[in-house]
Image 1 (tube, rainbow, N blue to C red):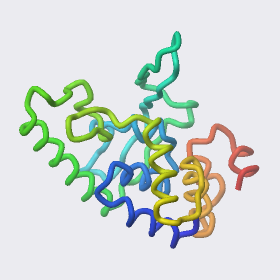
Image 2: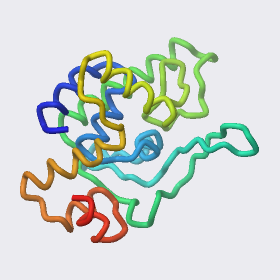
Image 3: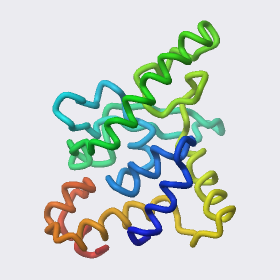
Image 4: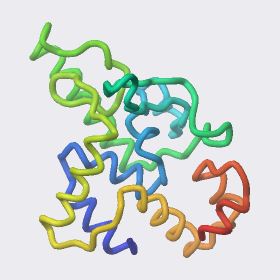
Length: 187
C-alpha cells in the first residue's frame, strides 16, 4: 500500500482486533507471529522502545492445531529493538488499561494464561495469527479496498522507509532480514 491506503486501513481498524496488527505490520513490518508474540514485558515505555523477541505460531501437530509460543524468532536477526512511536505508545497504554479492566470485570472467566501478551481479546484469549489473515481480507473486501496479503504490509513498511530515504542496511535491520541480499532483492 501507499501511505494514503495505509492511513485509510488504519482508520478502518481503529478499536478492532485488527488495529494493532495493521499498525505493527504497516509501520514496523512485523510478521503475524511477531505481532501475536508481542508481550507487555517486551515494551519499554520509559525509553520508547519495544523488542521483537518472542513469536506465536499455530502449526498442525499430529493433525491438531497447536499454539506454539517461543522466545525466538524466524532468524537470529529477527530479534530486534524498534522505536516506539508516541501515538502507538499512548494507544498501547490505553489497551493495557482496558485489559486490566477486563481482568477485574470478568474475574475467573478471564484467561490468565496470556496475561503478558498484548494481542488478547476481552476475555484474555490470545488472538491467533490464523485470525488475522481472513479478518484482514474480509475488512478489505467489505470496504472496497485493494486486496493485498497481510504479509504485504511488510512490503508497505519497507517501501515507505525507502521512500523516506532510509538506507537498505537500516531497512534490513528494521525488518529483521538475515542478510542484505534478501532486502535488496525484494525492494
